[in-house]
Amino acid sequence: MCTSFIYRENDRIIGMNFDNNGMDFSIDTSAPDFFLVKVGKGKHPSFGVNKNGVFFNNLMVDSNGKGLYRRPSKNITHTTKFITDILKGNILIENLGEYLNNIEVVNVPDWSTHNMICDSKANVWIVEPGRGNLYSPADSSPFYVMTNFSLWDYEKDLIPCECQRYKKVFTSLSDSGKLDVDSAFKILESAKQNNEEWKTDFSMVYSEKEHSVYYCLNGNFNERFKYVFQA
Image (cartoon, rainbow, N blue to C red):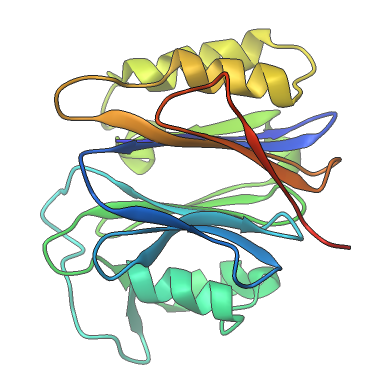
């Protein structure tokens, strides 16, 4: 279970809590243009940001019984391949809307996830296999929040929001005024988890103004590390 948000006012700030249930994960900066976190035995890209501020994640969401795995083809891709193709440049972010109009994204076997993609201008796409795709232009709202319930169902008034993390982050961003790195971390800390099943193992904040990613480990928000993208 995870939490992410895109803030698009005085600085474009991206926040992400990775809430883990014991899976292996690693930070990958071997490609200097990318800050990636890979998860699982196969170390698949789970979330990250590049030097242009293009962000992606792949978060768990309850299945509605649709969007089940099918072999990739000209008209079908799955969530992991979708993310990998964006990272490799096989899908150009400026063409993402057109791509999603022509390709069905399905889940990988035995998983149900949804994706948040944010481009360098803070336009946001939500991709939910078996449900649909949402588009939030940069000028449509000052921020956008995602957790682990279906945003498609919520925005289509099919379900209420019962996720306390979503409510907490949404309210904090509504009341925040101008956000900076410190206040973004405070919001992430307010939404951290530490229970028997889920623990916040990794948190990151990307600042476009600073061209940097700040991050902390094991729910320790008092010790931060910094990764600076090269010009």
